[in-house]
Amino acid sequence: MLPFCLTKLPDFLIIGAQKAGTTTLFDCLRQHPQISMPGVKEVHFFDLNYEKGINWYKKFFRMRIPFRRRINGEASPYYLFHPVVPERVSRHLPQVKLIVLLRNPVERAYSHFRHEIKHKTETLTSFEEAIKQESDRISQAEKSLIAGQIEKSNAHQSYSYISRGMYARQIERWLNFFPLSQMLFIKSEDFFSNPKNELAAIYRFLDIREVFPKNIIAQNTNYYAGLSTKLRKKTSLLFDKDGEKLTRLIGDKFQWDF
Image (cartoon, rainbow, N blue to C red):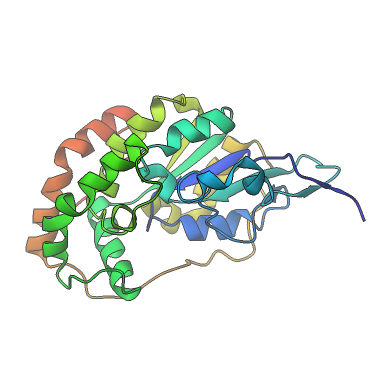
């Protein structure tokens, strides 16, 4: 048996957004013959397990020698939103390539809310009430994470329905540490409507062959009643300013009809 190499840290990260198709993309990429992915989708090293140290992280990326141009990657969608992750990633993986899936922020927020309801981490039954209380529930936790006073916050991770859809704010934080050339942005709606086209863009970004998965199946999907037209419109207004900034940052493609 060929020996394992314990030093091949990730060449790319799928950093988010949550509820934007990261599980489906992870499943597609791990079928590629040139890509190695951990057995678990969300390693959560740079956000929830950072205190365990880089050697703990390396254990997820054992590769047989010779590499034969194989690359490593992982997907942890909380990375995009967590306020201190960009600096941590830049410290350990300064050349890493970053893949970001962005979904209609209203749809993403409501899907996130239904996810928390399903997993019994959300006690509020009204989406409107949840977004009304969001700032009070998570703002102090974010400040404490930035200050290093706490290592993790369930509220910040679970109740960030609107905040996680403020994409420009999050991307700007990453751009303090990484150039745009190391980032690839994929519109979730395009990925699900034409997955081969978006996968081809990802393969070019990662500099690997075009080898498409045999099966492209949407993963981690949920079915629930949609938002009313009135509440959808009201929620969409919360993203107006951030959406304008987002198009200035990464292009007009990233606009959505509400």
